[in-house]
Length: 352
Image 1 (tube, one colour):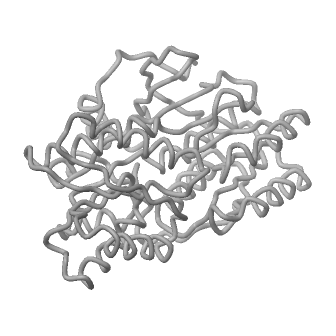
Image 2 (image 1 turned 90 degrees about the horizontal axis):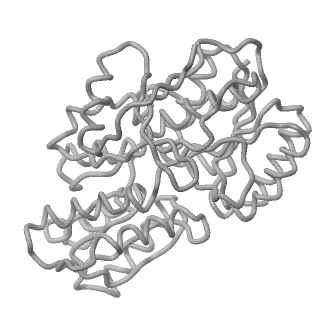
């Protein structure tokens, strides 16, 4: 049975409606995605395998588990592996500064005879040779969440277009200001990750021609402590700042920093991606909203891609979940099981 059904190209608005309607079904599929083939982008309904033909041994590498974004991705990985009946060993490197550790973990996967390796890479450049090494030995390589360019060989990959996602959040910000001017400092993430630079570019592009002035860009690791220092420094260095735009840990750190500085009411906060803290903060009114790239679904799709490659079944080579901006106005239309892990779920590092 053909697993990939072509559908008409959809806008972000119509796609988010389709997702909310799909949430009524028991299964997570079909899930509307963009399928990228060179310069061509089509819209498809992703439908996974029913079940793997054997207990494949999958190795999964992620940058860290410091926040609920990567916990959500891990949840998607583990639950799809459980559903299809395969084994998983999950490794986390502890942060974006730990590229050597992720490389060593990749070597551990190879030494452990992994059938396929799924990687949320700390650095595309730093991991590129490892991906080729795995492919040369017949081990499928799946890129997950973090971007991998066309010059880096991969079996398949799943991640959003980060420029598009950032632009969506920037457009939302401009609309929420109702034509009023603003001064924003952006905190796009760790420099050299690839996705942070794409976020920054997309956000800059969204501000072109508007009354919102970007006064600084601050790069740093996505731990809350690292982001807190950047925010506190910016409050001192740029007192004219009245908008903070950045990663989910940035927004999380900003809430306390603004309260401490007595500026909670005059500085707006917007997150370019999701975690559980962002959902809670939005519901409390501490932030305007956040973008989502559906990390749970990305984890599920990455596992399915690996199984398809191992079983010589058709594989979408490059899948992009279509980002959606979540605010109080549309939160009820989004199936949060595609965005975040259940609050009671704890990371599982080995699934036998």
